[in-house]
Amino acid sequence: MSLLEIRGLSKRFGGLLAVSNFDLGVEAGEIVGLIGPNGAGKTTVFHLIAGFHSPTSGEIRFKGASVIGAKPHVICRLGLTRTFQIVQPFAGLSVIENVMVGAFNRERDARAARQAAAEIVDFVGLGPRRDAPARSLTLSDRKRLEIARGLATRPDMLLLDEAMSGLNPTEIDEIVKLIRAIHARGVSLLIIEHVMQAIMALSHRLVVLHHGEKLAEGAPAEVARDRRVIEAYLGEEA
Amino acid sequence: MLALVALVALPPLLPKYHLEVLISIVFWAYLGIAWNILGGYAGQFSFGHAAYFGIGAYASTLLLLRAGLSPWLGMVLGGALAAAFGLFQGYLSFRYGLKGPYFSLVTLAFAEMLRVVAVNTKAVGSSLGLVVPTTQEAARLFIFAGKLPYYYIILVMGALALALTWKIERSRLGFSLAAVRENEDAAETAGVDALGTKLRAMALSSFLTALGGTFYAQYFAYIDPTITFGPSVSIGALLPAIVGGAGTVLGPVLGSFVLTPLSELTRSALRGRAGADIMLYGAVLVLVISFLPQGIMGFVRERRMRGRA
Image (cartoon, rainbow over all chains, first blue to last red):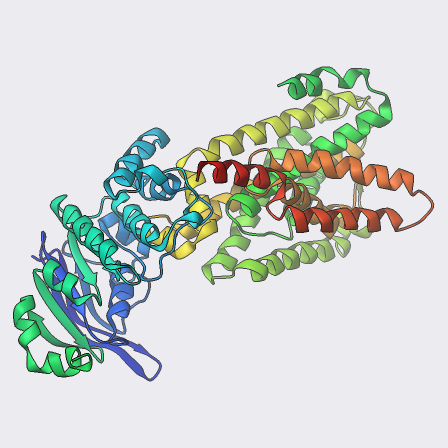
């Protein structure tokens, strides 16, 4: 049984079929990259998995149980959460308070939640900014905060939606290191990313989405050689 | 600390008028504290807290008049009734995603609806209202000869509500409330049940507000639909919180200590010029809101946070 199993997933918005008959399995301990041109339907897939939209048809199972119709907070408590492409910090709260919101899922007591949150704030490298208001953070730090808040819910699986977009090469390297460290904590990852070098290096497996359909799937090197993928996606830049 | 001692020890020495003003200050602070749980902490800007206030006032008074039930008990029943009404209203609004000004309008509409119903219902005294019998002093019936006992009652109510807010702020619920206020989608991904959190805030806030309604009925011994369900109560509940600092423990208290004496002062200073006091009061409000949009406490907190950043 896969940790996450998606079968025949479709989502229609009016006349637009954003995701069409999409299948995906993610095993425990895997890092899977989800790539594709803009508008391919990647973020819609995330919305569907995390419970922000209900699919038009298809099945999503996490740890064997269907999560169709479950609200995001229920799915989060099951052990699956996501980050947002456009970071959404609790702007008025401090860094540690942001992370504590997530930590309260596993800790009832405020002191325990603060302790767990502090550990994660240090882990993502925001230790020195712990008491700063979230609205004062740089984009790079906000991306870290977004990840930290997700991690604090102690997920078995984390969906990262473009955690590197808008960052400079040095910051990207740091996020890649952070993602590896998160994986080392035993968290499985499904990652949407446009920074090809990073996603190639990180992913055990790549899934290519194009016009809402799965175009290719396999080891990063294989996928990069796939002619259809080059035409549909990489070709645009070559 | 000194302020607290003064609040407990000084009032017996005050002349009657000053005691009345002080009761008024603590009373509006109390309603502000109650409003603050929903409006400040959960960020659901209610413009219709008069609904819960009126339910509390009418429930305890009707139970006293028709069934001889002690208002102390009626107070709790009224609170429960108001909480049930708040949950119903909140569920309807939140379930269908009403946010911001739309939610405010719905709360306003519900309060106005109750006012119109009360005006047109003979059984609750219609627009003439209800008189609470005060012929004899009876602690059991929430009736006292002087003003002082009322002062201590509302002081204790305020202190308890304040302690509750303080406790909530530091608890899991407090963090959930802040998360929902700041960003509902992000709150949900962090495992916060947004609907449940808002309903909890609604229940607590409406319950406490209703207790204030009973206090009002007993203190003034008279209620009518406009006084209890009218917009002035709704505004009176939200202003201290907003001016003092919505979503902070002490905000509503500070707000009431600024606003209530101000309104009393402008009223007595401009006696004889109808409306002038309200104009001055309004001007001060405009100034506060433009220069301290986060309220007095919000301003203090912001500065402190910036210091650490």
